[in-house]
Length: 93
Image (cartoon, rainbow, N blue to C red; front, side, top):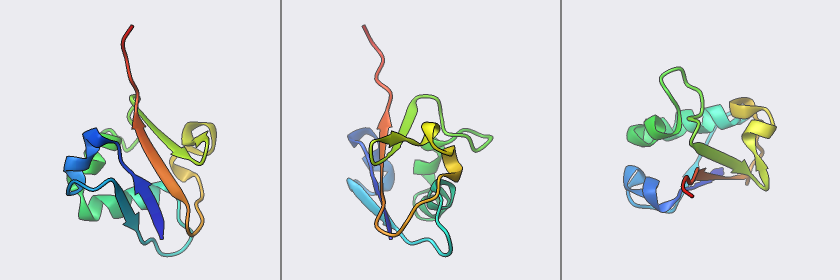
């Protein structure tokens, strides 16, 4: 089981919950977790990735303290019990 923590702005697209648990067969990656999310919450996936399947520029996804962009991106390998944290970028000045 992999957990995905959602910011308030994305919760309406996942039934209002803060945390979604995803079951993935085989060797889970961020991409396979997103695919499982899409099956249950299709509107959520569209807010995380673009039309080509890449993580949107304004979306940051963390595994522990590491942004997945600094790891292997969507191909970052996960292990049972991992938790992904999704945070939108904040702009302003």
